[in-house]
Length: 431
Image 1 (cartoon, rainbow, N blue to C red):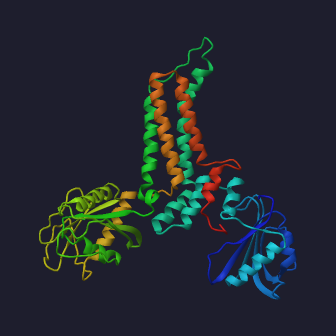
Image 2 (image 1 turned 180 degrees about the vertical axis):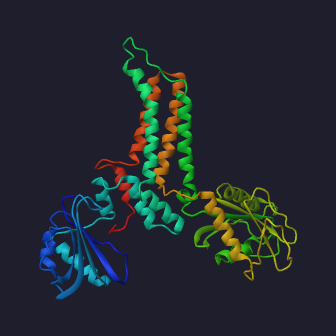
Image 3 (image 1 turned 90 degrees about the horizontal axis):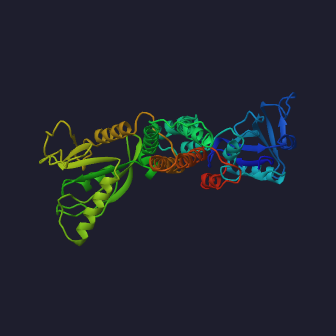
């Protein structure tokens, strides 16, 4: 693929002021010479730079205004020669130009082809490729900041530091093994197991930092409280949903989920069965489902009627409903009247602030692949710690070399490695 020319529309689908058509590979000059009429008499298709002119589409008799940008290997985003055409943003026009270029011998770029070229040519590592997709899929400013930080190499540097820590653990073990058949005693530091435990804790912290965004895509805000506290009415107001509401306790038996936003942050709102609701076979299933939702919550919100303020314990935020009936509520609670919308914007802002505070100032953009790899490495590091206590040092060394391999595979892969196919399987064409 690095040798052939590939082409695709690289801008978003739909009408726009301009569309971007990207080609990468080798011998791109021949495509420019065949179709581009430059406005400059000094333009050279082999030079790096830009030029305005007209693009000819013979099949339709079109002469289209175009900006041509040429980037030369290896100083391009893909590590190969790259040409980008900026044309008027008509989908039909852009597709016609791509079809014409394919007719001239270019191949249609596969999903993720340009980013994959960048990985194979050392312009990006796999963690940064994950960050490209995270940036494409970012749904709020926090997502975008995390993805941009990872694309700049933040996640890669973190993984590299973990690899370096593993090397520090391996050096005394490898030295002991190298001289095991000689009269030189290998000295294993007394604190080696402690240092290995600290590394395992760092791996655990890195996985935990991925938070609900890696595990579930959106942070889960779970509403809990007594039956008839107004949870479902509040949930309807927050999400635009239509959960059944009534004065009869136990109306909600299932866990209802629906996307919404809080001060621009997408969240998943979850309504649950009342804590003190009726009991029975079906009701007990609802209570069990509520407990599962509580365990998986990114933010737990206690809901109570403002007339009683009987809030459940252990909730990060408390909200009092029926504010129209009682004007005074506890200072540490947010008051709302769901039917009228009073207090809802302030409550949403409080939820967004709490979620951002919980995820830290520098949220991570780990893909599920990276999170799983870090988790696997932590397991293997701990296995080495156990081996160090009860087996010859080569057993621990073997485990920690395996952990090192797992971490390195998060950033690098060989051509034909199935991990590459896993990463780019869900990508769109043009990226």
